[in-house]
Picture 1: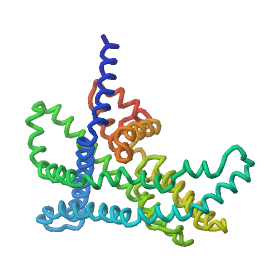
Picture 2: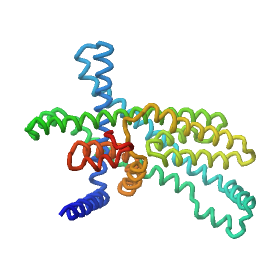
Picture 3: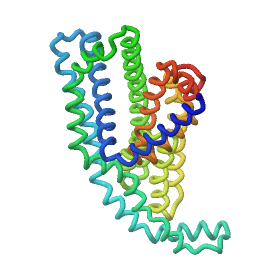
Length: 346
């Protein structure tokens, strides 16, 4: 009977994932909206703590913190969208103009390693860099195109905040269950807040330092690469690697007559990523997330397969939420233990 239940749960899990993939046009905008609503709520609470508790502003300012939170997140998204939109076509055209340099680079590499079985033209035909760049921002552009639906969802989520809080006692009449649900929500917002604050700071710091390094050698579209680094650093492990490849490769194509700019950019970006990713990020995060690295990679692959690049962006917050919920339910607590790094709750 126990094995039968496990089999049914596994089938149900795969069925849910299949439905989420096939209906992503319906569910993904709502999940994105839910994520942004969560960020707005976190920023709103942070502003309330800052203005009311620390700076002793009058109580009426609590009515303006929500608007200030919305303006803050809207400004950040607007800057990112404009930065990508104004540069993506120029970046693709620039890479195309470096076709001859790319051909020479491939020939040099093949000569150095004594590779005679491959033809440089064949390799170049299979490596379409402009197409690769367009693919990286394709899902992001798709998100922008569905902005209207996302905004509608966010608006209704904001309007439903108070009524949702009032509904909780009606949904969970037993005090024990109500306390558990409130505890889940408190933990989720606390962990998401920690993750987003740390990730925003480290991603912004990475982008700023990398921008200075790239600008010091006058690399083309340094601001665009910095914005791309800021965004892709929210994707665990692979994001920072992908974000670093493009400017490093461009430095080889742009400065094909000298290796000094390539060396400066490569060394600077790699050191920046290693120091921030392996020292600053873990130090700021501490053990607050406590998710297994293997689980994070699997989550990245699964949600990336289901919802593309946007799924990769959301993979960590989704795992934080799932782990907290599973840990608070006695029947699924063991699963939550498997998802954590040291077996303790996140």
